[in-house]
Image (cartoon, rainbow, N blue to C red; front, side, top):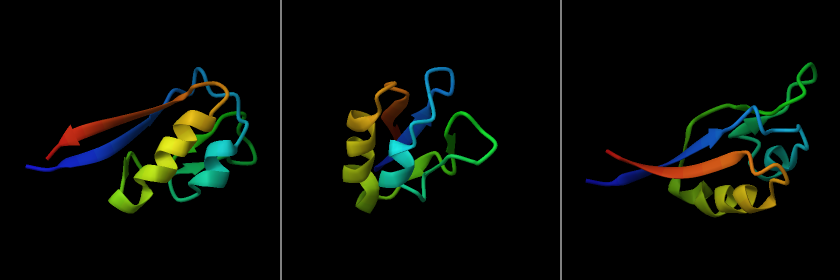
Amino acid sequence: MSAATTVELDQGRCRGYGICVSILPDVFDLPADSKVAVLLRDEVDADDVDDLEESVRACPAQAIIQGARSI
């Protein structure tokens, strides 16, 4: 059994700073017509875990949640 690293974005907390997009553009996006970021996928590859952790720490709104899912 292995664990996949999951990511959630609390859009109620998000303020659209876009820091997450600059760190992980393959996971987060900030559409031009939106005031909040959106998730492009809800799991990250092992190569992206460090960047995800950086995104969690860097988010001023604390809107990003990192977790693990057993698969």
